Amino acid sequence: MTTPSAIRMEQLTKHYPGVQALTDLTLDVQHGSIYGFLGPNGAGKSTTLKVLAGLIRPTSGSASVAGTPLAAGEAYRREVGYLAQDPRFYDWMTGRETLEFVASLSADPSARDRAWIAAVLARVGLADAAERRTKTYSGGMRQRLGIAQALVTRPTVLLLDEPVSALDPIGRREVLDLMSDLKGEATVFYSTHILDDVQRVSDDVAILDHGRLVRSAPTSELLSSFTKDRLRVSFVGATDATAVALAALPGVASVEPAERDGEQRSYLLRIQPADAMGVQRAVTQFASERDLTLVENGLVRLDLEDVFLRLVDPKERAA
Amino acid sequence: MTAQTIARPVAAPAFGRFTGLRPLLRKDTTEWMRGRRALIVLVITATFMVLTAANAWITTQIAQSLPPDVVPPELPGSLAPLDNLMVALGSQIFILAAIFAVASLIVRERESGTLAWVASKPVTRDAIWLSKWISAGSILAVTAVLLPLAATTVVVIALYGTFDLVPVLVVAAAAVAAVAFYAALGLAAGTAMPGQPAIVATGFMVFALAPLVVGLIPLPIAPFLPTSILAWGMGAVSGADVGWVTPVAWALWTSGLVVLAIVRMRRIEL
Image (tube, rainbow over all chains, first blue to last red):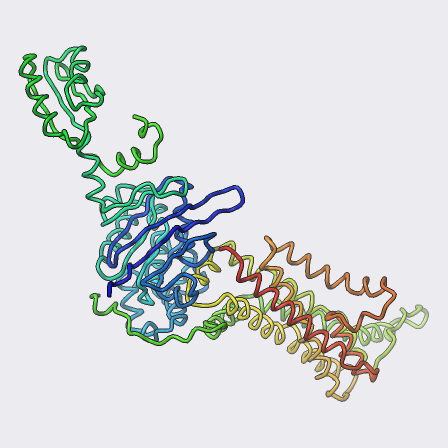
């Protein structure tokens, strides 16, 4: 018998009158992974997370966490710890009381253990602020309390909606470190539009645009699949005609002039990934035949931002 | 923390329609106790009821202290203790207090996001709403009805003399029932209306329009309205033959409102 996915979504759809917030999202998230859910504003990320948190009902499709279907209601929500985009807690409660309250809603009596609650507070760096009312917390502290309250009931899955978007660099670093720290313990499914962060902490990514899944893959695989289709070459001694000549090389789809630094000119060549080696050899020969000094001839290392833009930006896609 | 510590012991959870009600009740009641709302309700209601009950005595004292050549003001109808207690209850200030006090309970939580936060936990929406109603009803019963009524009773006895306290219990029960109905109404409106003013307006509309509707319709519908429960209690105390239609109608209307609110609560998209 195979272990069910941590999160499974099948043709998950949420339509409002006149708005197709989410359409046919099918996604599997493996246990213990940190899964980045990317998309521009309005792509449907928050809608997906709210459906998964049981806060809004899908128009159609299904979802499950650790094999428990969304339709199971409270039994399903027991498997889930949810952190909203701008988490708010009862401002009359202290940090400790907030966790105690959440733990009291759990069917698991061990979640109410004072030592456990103290350990969770210490883990998110709020031990010293545990007796302070949450209304005195900064944005970063609220976010960390949000992660703590999501963790305190030991859920299978943590759903974090834009957990770092509103934080300053220090707060962002703290929360990302915390998320990295959870790897292997709980499955973290989080939405964001900060691509640097995803590249840093996520094992897998899914990219959503206009409510539809554009691509999902392990982060490294996604990056490498795009890395092999762009070559950067630089020559000393190139002329205006060099770009045209490069475009005529076999395997080169297009040439885009890049920087010019004195005598040195650089070009970005779009190629078929399968032809990468062949094109690199052709470029070497090209330089030799034209008496150019070849300074650079390598595959471009794309970051997630480039990949993201190429997947969701119509201009980039057209290019 | 290690993976071992986070592994959840498998408990057999019993999920039912009211899962989470007890901890939610504890939370909601604590919120009432720590906030100023209950105290404000108590101070306003008690002050208003005590002054209303003392009005006849104060007016009489003023009249007696006037010089003989001054025409005294019109004296209130009665100096009987129970009559003045009924006047204080008849002001229905506790109903107005209840309307205001519950108006923000759901709306504020929807706006701040705490309702969504709680609803994402393993609790039912039924339990969330019921907890608010039970806690609000209980706290308001004490702070808007029982304590002000006790204070008023003490003042009435001090100013007008002793009287049989059994009727007070009957009217107190009716007043508590009225508060429970208006609390249910306000919280039900909170599941459907976007803002606090609309909810207050709904409460006032029911409070003010019910007697008008009764007056306009040429049928004896008053006993069938939940808003008549206080009048029923006061009528029972005065010895009128009030029957049991009104308490039954109150129970049916209130239950209907609760069911409606819960159904609506389940459908809210947070």
